Image (cartoon, rainbow, N blue to C red; front, side, top):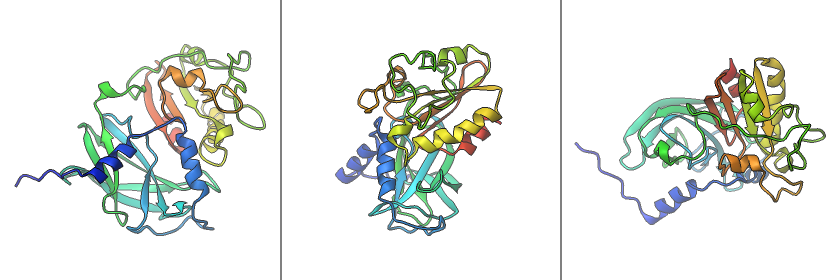
Length: 294
């Protein structure tokens, strides 16, 4: 029997449209949600169908291949500071409910106190279409996602070369003030430009994020988590570029425009030839980057 295609009503179109919106202020939106989260002294907590799944991936930049789908849980007050140690779920085709990937498992991760926990589901989806991630015990309609044709994506993705750029360094801020918004002092990832790192012949980790404008959210803890990795992996060059060119955070820095980014933070890992092997965006744990480099 041929599965019937789901009729998309106006409410669904609006929901899918909202899922397709991403901005440079992504991390601050998530931080704001986290700031109103329900308080809890423990990470352990339930999931039920009255909760919402917060999509912490970038909705308009998913292409064919392995999908990394981080989510958090939320109630009417905002993102929750607790949840199960493990979530299970599946991906379905949104239009006909056919199961595309089943028996998916995601382990709870946290960036530390005051940060909403998140779970990362991963699965391969090659066909461009509209899908939903449905988590067991959660809302029945899940969280929608759209896989687009690779030709419609503007941000470099795994398999493509990472474009070079003269990022700000300790010796040359290149008009970005502060060069690094980490406090109380800049991070150590400004010794060389991205161009110089790519010419070095080693692997490169390139992160674009703004610690000063989301210190209670995402950018600051993920940058702090990278610093020990810089010492751990001497065969890799780490480079950081800030999102804003001014202290007030009103002018977007050239590094953002160079990659046509509509979101942040984002992190690229390359091999020794400069080809991207991994891309992380929205939220990630240092252990995910460690695994990519190991």
